[in-house]
Image 1 (cartoon, rainbow, N blue to C red):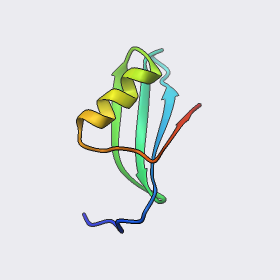
Image 2: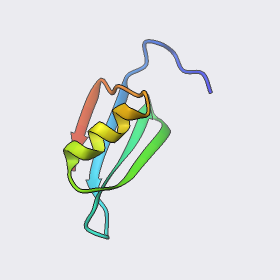
Image 3: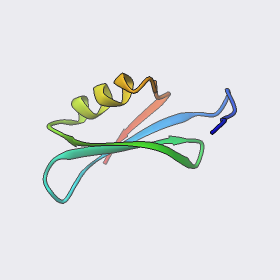
Length: 61
């Protein structure tokens, strides 16, 4: 899957119904990945970075 190098990468973090934190990673409007089962929003952001994705923007809902 190729993405425009200028495309903004956004990590959208939210609390799942289980009470744990999760996140969805978007390149522009296309979802390119997800992280789940984390203890905190910071843990979601760290898990996303460990996959090699470095978001330009982080949104916490």
